[in-house]
Each structure stands twice: as structure tokens, then as C-alpha cells.
Figure 1 (cartoon, rainbow, N blue to C red):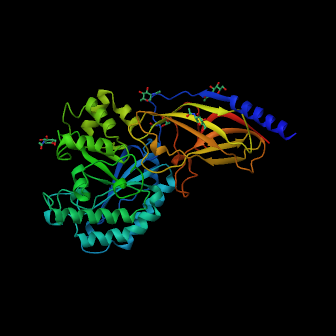
Figure 2 (figure 1 turned 180 degrees about the vertical axis):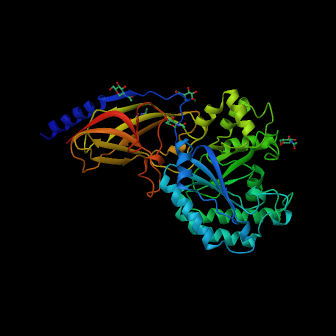
Figure 3 (figure 1 turned 30 degrees about the vertical axis):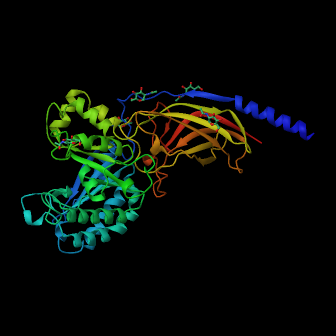
Length: 456
Ligand SMILES: *[C@@H]1O[C@H](CO)[C@@H](O)[C@H](O)[C@H]1NC(C)=O
Ligand SMILES: *[C@@H]1O[C@H](CO)[C@@H](O)[C@H](O)[C@H]1NC(C)=O
Ligand SMILES: *[C@@H]1O[C@H](CO)[C@@H](O)[C@H](O)[C@H]1NC(C)=O
Ligand SMILES: *[C@@H]1O[C@H](CO)[C@@H](O)[C@H](O)[C@H]1NC(C)=O
Ligand SMILES: *[C@@H]1O[C@H](CO)[C@@H](O)[C@H](O)[C@H]1NC(C)=O
């Protein structure tokens, strides 16, 4: 009897194995914009700390969202506090900004702090290190509790516009070893003021190398390990403006391969700052955005460069390829499964974007009962930050159904929600695949277009 049962189990397992199905999906062309989180053209919004506070209002945020922009570069000028703490009024205005972003949904902030927006008043380019460290300590609770709506933080603080050049206290025009140690103290404090899930971006390759005494780019083994070096990304605020992007690069022979490798695993973004043809035209722009894995650029500056991309025919491509763009090519799914026996699922993703995700995110297989809509969400082991651009990723996993699942028919979905539970049920913060007919706007799930029969 036992032998017969064993034979039956083997036969049944074989039946399950042979009943897997190949499903192909239709991919959206690159001309179609998908308003996915943490990527794309950003809108610049700054506020001073004297005069009227320029708040992020609900109506402004709604308009930005309606334009399919999901990132805002939020720049806080702390010049009123050069010699004092940040006022509690200012801190609470910042909190209101974060609240409004979260209420709007879909949008996240690229944060930057600075003390001056003009190089002409040379005595007040920035605060002392002691004041900066005190300010970062004051900001820490705010950064921690609002990390859900912060995509990434630019190092800022030092120098006019927080761009690390015109500085009173950190080595102008050329930092010494002591200046680099002081700069590193600011960056370390900022990293410490953020959850380890978040990255800080440094203005130039040389600055990162000089501060952290490391000349080799981070490796695959180090990627996303939440160590200091794996949390320090890059931003270039003078993209294409000269052969060195106005001093962004010290030596392109050294800096290019370094930056190209680092940005596979680290956040990269910036803005253009002036016409410099032919370098600032479409061919070099698209080549370098792919090479350096850009996730974001300023949509409002510099207008002549952006217009040259419109007339050159690459603007929409750039808009849609920045960051990640996940095309679900096919999947291999079972028709039937028993509750006790694990089954294999396989799916293939083409990342046609310039970059991968830089913030952590889970992937869930969601099973929805077709009779009563009851849902079961099963975490997969795959990490979508490793679904790199320019390659196909095959995810192949064994799935164990929850013991409590009732028998029945289940529609299958993939869900990539935000990591933070405060916003993980908001579909605008979930990742939408670049496919026809798979996105379910109400839930933020991607439909696998297949039904699984669950049996005893
Ligand atoms: C925003 O994206 C959606 C979805 O792709 C699209 O239907 C809509 O036309 C876009 N709106 C704008 C203003 O680009
Ligand atoms: C840049 O670095 C390369 C490789 O080390 C070196 O050969 C070259 O002389 C450097 N160029 C300048 C301008 O320093
Ligand atoms: C993946 O996307 C890239 C960029 O759009 C495209 O060139 C390539 O053909 C795609 N690969 C597949 C297998 O669809
Ligand atoms: C997928 O995983 C299953 C079970 O782990 C294995 O038998 C199969 O060979 C894998 N398929 C591919 C294409 O990697
Ligand atoms: C879903 O699958 C059916 C075939 O079962 C196919 O006709 C349909 O086009 C697919 N829908 C999508 C959005 O891929």
C-alpha cells in the first residue's frame, strides 16, 4: 500500500512538472512614459530660511505628479542659521513638506542643504564644521522618520549651492588632507543621520576617492551591503558642459571607468548646465547616461541643452530610460500545485533603463482567489536591485504555498511595493513593469496573466 502511494506521488509530481506553461508578454515601446518611483526627470524646488518659506504645497505636488514627475530636488538654504541652531519653526515647515509629499503619493525627494546661493558674498559661503554637525544632529530625527519619502540625499552643506567648491571652511580652491578629513566628517555624520537604507551622493569622483582613500570602484560583492563605501553615490551638476564637465572630472582616463563601474551599484544623477556642442547634443548625452547609469536629471535646467535634446529627438528616450525600466518578457508558471509541494516559477526581465534600483525593494508573488478575492502574498528571494540594465535577468525560484491557503483557483501577480510600510500599500509607490495590460492601478500589482489551481 505504502509502495503504491509512493508511486502515485511520483506520478503526480511528474504531472505537476509537465504542466508548467510558457507565457509571453507584450512590452511597451520606449516612447511610452511610465511614472515609476525614484527615477526620471526631477523638478527643482528650493526655499530660503529668511522671508517667506516656499512650502511644497499639495496643489504644486499634484501638478508635478500629473506631469509624471516622481522626483523633486528639494533644496533647503540654511543661511539664517549660520551661527545658530535651525529654528523649530523651520524644522516644522520641513516636516509639513514631507507630510504633503507622502499625502500626494508617488513622489520622493532628492534632498540637499546649503548655506548660500551666490558666490558674490564671499564671507558667507557656508557654516563652520561645528555648526554643520550641530545642524545635521538636529535634522537626524526628521531624516530618519521621513526616509520613506526621501529617495536619496546629496552631500551638500559645504560651499555655495552645497556644491563643494566656493567654501569658507573646507579648503578653497583646493582642499588639503586636513580639509578632506573635515569633509569626510560631514559626510559620515550625514550617513549616520539617515537609515542605512539610504545613500548620499558626492559631487565628484575625486572627492569620494580623497575622503575615503580608495581608488578602486566598489565591486559586486560590496554592492548594497550598507557599508559606508556602498552608500556613497555620485551626482554631476554640470553634465556635458565641457570636456571635464566644468571640473567634475579631474582626469577622464581615470574617472570614467571608475564612475561607470560604481554607478552600476550606486545612485547617479544631476543636471546639465550649459550648451557645449557637439558634446551636449543627443549622441554623447545618451551614450554617457547609459555609461554612468543615470537615474535622474533636472527637467528645468539648462533649458537650451534640454531643447537641443527635443529637436535632436532623444528627449523622450532619455525621459523614459532614466533609472530602471523593467520589461517582463516571459514567465514559466505551473497550472496546478498541491499545498504541501513547492513549485517552481521562472520569469525573465529585461531592464531597458540606464540604471538599476538603488533603494531596496522586495518582490512578492501574490495569489488572488478568483472566487472571493482573498489574497496571499509570498516574498521571493530575488533582489530587484540586481536586475541590472543592458541584460536579461532570469528569476527562477521554488515557491512554498502558505499552509493556510484554501484550495481553489488563484490569479498570479508580481508586487514590488515600497519597503516602508508607511507607503507600501500606496500603488503609486510600487514598480510598474513596462508592459501592455499587466498593471493593476488599484493595487499596484503586475498581472502575470495566469491562474494557478491549488489542490490538497
Ligand atoms: C503620464 O503617464 C501616463 C501613463 O503612461 C500617460 O497615460 C499620460 O499621458 C502621461 N501624462 C503626461 C502629461 O505625460
Ligand atoms: C590621466 O591619467 C592617465 C592614466 O594614469 C595618465 O596617463 C595621464 O597622463 C593623465 N592625464 C593628465 C592630464 O594628468
Ligand atoms: C532589452 O532592452 C534593450 C533596450 O531597449 C533592447 O535593446 C533589447 O533588445 C531588449 N532585449 C530584449 C530581449 O527584449
Ligand atoms: C530552475 O530551478 C529548478 C529548481 O531549483 C531547476 O531544476 C531548474 O533547472 C532551474 N531552471 C533554470 C533555467 O535555471
Ligand atoms: C493574457 O493571456 C491571454 C491568453 O490566455 C491573451 O490572449 C492575452 O492577450 C493576454 N493578456 C496580456 C495583457 O498579456
